[in-house]
Length: 367
Image (cartoon, rainbow, N blue to C red; front, side, top):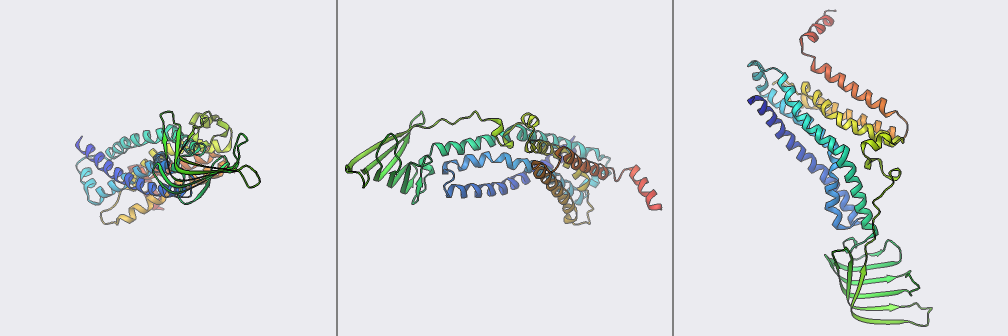
């Protein structure tokens, strides 16, 4: 049907534009947070883009339902304001077509939300932790900041680099404070240096035009060595990927693991993910009557109540999740109450203009 394709096309265009804008906003917030961590040396610079991409899953939890909600609200509201929807109904096209269009878009959005909540979200959270943990146990040159004294993760050495440009560095200072295997403390000062990596992941550090000072003031034997090239190999440590489920964050657990986990945080996360999936058809069902507007009404009068209802829904759900994680509330009861209340509200609004509700309103107004 041409009208159905037209409504789907217009709504998807609006939803796509809104989704792009929301992603841009959330991307900017996430980028600022990651950049601040990279500046203070918490994460290496080469992890900025991977962490930013993996953070999309946490953004999509709220963006996908909101994009459909606003897409239907804006598109249908514009069609009502331009009297296009009125003309369709006058030509014999029933309102049932609106529900069919929204149902089609709702199924697509619901599938994406389900995949993100049940699979991609936990996987990306685990992957982010593994990347950060691997960067801590296998520090690279990308994680070193120029002009700052930094201690290695094992606490045995202090490194200072005057300037870093990709895999090259200038004015290198390395002090081995607590050497292993009965070695004496030493200091290496080099004019230049570079790093290379082989296929096995081993890192090679080459220092050029350097001096090595070995020993302390208390020792009689003190060595000073001059060398043109100094080569050192750093073998990467293996990251343990077999993490105990009891030590994992609840956001990293699948839906079945959350259901079997007896902790309060796991139960709260379980019902929160179910609510994210349920919110897609629930909010889509609610927004259809809210998008109906009079051509003489302002667009603000139509959008504000809908946004307020959406905001209240997710604020209540977030509050229940936070309090349920602290064992203050029963998540099953409260999430059920919120969803049931909004479903009842959506049912009333969708039936408000049918014949039965009109007769019922007339009976009440007669008194």
